[in-house]
Image 1 (cartoon, helix red, strand yellow):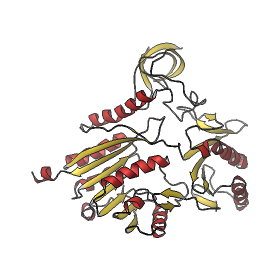
Image 2 (spheres, one colour; image 1 turned 30 degrees about the vertical axis):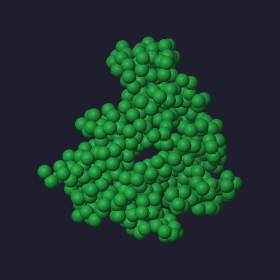
Image 3 (tube, rainbow, N blue to C red; image 1 turned 180 degrees about the vertical axis):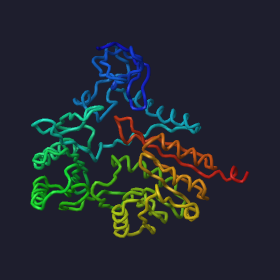
Length: 416
């Protein structure tokens, strides 16, 4: 039964929190102070209507916003949105008992997302292509995505639909990752599993009709018609199919700029969780770099880009699982700076080794404020000082936030 509630505040995932008849209820796409009607579903509520709107509400620019689970904040005015996102980080730091000034939020959306993942599902006789609805596996079909770069906005749904049509006989759920590169679209299809030789030939023909640079299944390259190059500084990298990539070009440039600036005086830098080298290749313009990453393909791509680019300082690479086998303190002591860019889970095991080392400078890049705070607290307790903290809004219109923290060993404190 529908009920009317007042939104008291927003949670970290942008859901409004209200007190309903049965306790706390979480409501998406609302704002503090609004009176709304919801249909409760456990601890969540489906928004029926906004009965008294906040002055901070604005009209979403995407026609799919109400149904789609991809964006969560298009209904917020820009100033409110920025303050809310900075407050997420400030609140997380307070919980971890970390005192540090938070710099203004950096807008790193740029032209938009250069990679999107669309879903193909067959819940009935028809094929459905699009994004998922909030808290659901139901597909919201889209014809375009306005937060993607211009080249992907309409092309990505069309490519996903063409691939779905080609592979629909198996009726398997497909997740189709489409990346815009310097040489065209790089597409990785997941969910289907292995295909027969005849089907691979059909996919090769399809890639030609769609003019794809590369088409792969679960990272296994079916055809590479052109190397799908990504510009990183003054180099060009061809990452492994389906591998990690910063969400926006501007986001990568902002993060890398902060990293390079912090490491300007470092002669030797360890770049841990280095991916295909967005930081290493820029750092090598002034410093020697040792790049470490679990994925061997990413290390190969980085090494190839380094060798093809004249004028860089030496980059060495190492394929290593830093969760199970972190660099030890004696190994780290050879470096003037360590750069960390781990997955969402953070890098607790590696950070404990850094804490035990003599490395004077740590630059921590994180896509999760909570794990950033946990790891930073370990370093602070061992004598590091968090001297700069920059929130970077690469995932605009979502609750996700990138953080760059610069931590320097407090020599005076260490001596005492």
